Image 1: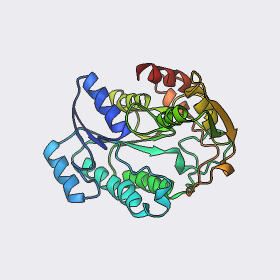
Image 2: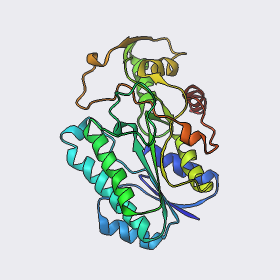
Image 3: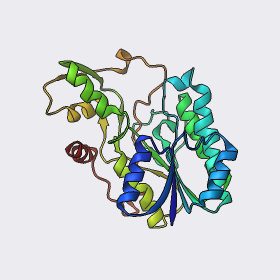
Image 4: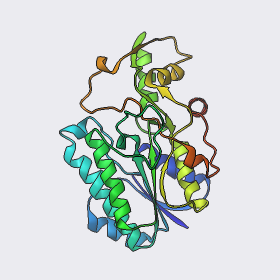
Length: 278
């Protein structure tokens, strides 16, 4: 079986490559310089050459605030048009597709847990584009898994863990938002789940995947820096105005993914394992 990875230089793309190498699985990977997924001809040519059996679609535009204005066009081109190109190419060549989406397809007004079948209502440009990307995958007719995730951190690239560590190195006091609730996700857990779907031949469709248990950004930061001599002060979202709306409560249910038999560690356990490795 041959895998093809898009977004090879991103957080998840690098994690996927590392995992496939560890498991000695055959794959090719493309970053945005090697394959512009917004170029339909280039995508079709790459698939015709490589003939993948499984496509792990990790390429995405993730600059949430910039997507509201100066990045609006590229946000749509990558997350919608690019995803459509990848899905159509996978369909044409009979490959299975595992595409990554986001909790931002929900509005964050639900005090409970969002299930895969719950109504979507994205409130920012990034969320709207990712939802349109989901629809492009479904409309292509490709055999696909859509994996919605949230609050991603990992070894590669920029993320909240590294940001907090850098700030703590230069400040004795940090203020962190404490009124947004979600589930952090380690890229390794996400990558393992993506491969697990293929390995067990799970039913096609949408799945939520993050690490287990919930947190606010303040609680997440406190755990990251618990052994660091820095004061962390909880504040409200109003103290940190941003261009793009952030869901206040984007906790997604993990019941469907757990029912597959996939072991999902808590975010605290995942974080500690990650920190011990870096």
